[in-house]
Amino acid sequence: MKIQERLKSPTPPFFKKLRNIGIILAATGGAILAAPITLPSAIITVATYLTVAGTVASTVSQAVVSDKKGKSE
Image (cartoon, rainbow, N blue to C red; front, side, top):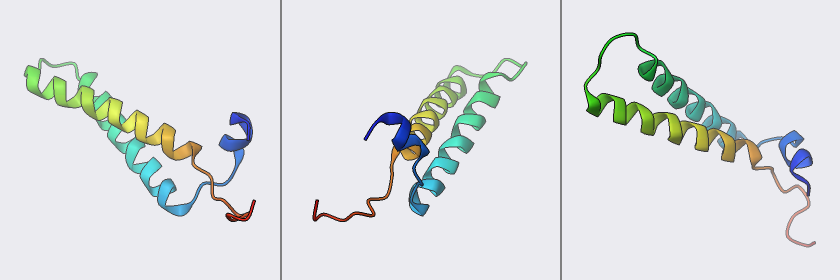
């Protein structure tokens, strides 16, 4: 299966929820990083990890497809 076919295929419900959670994490981390005020370095570090983890979770979850054919093939 090519990557274009995989990304266009339907995503299972669990991974849709995981993708949405990843988007929320990435958006939260990005909002904290873009804040126009000076924040402690610990908060900046946590926001960076949130952004990376959210982006990875969203990307991986989008690439998962359900196997309708079963294990017989």
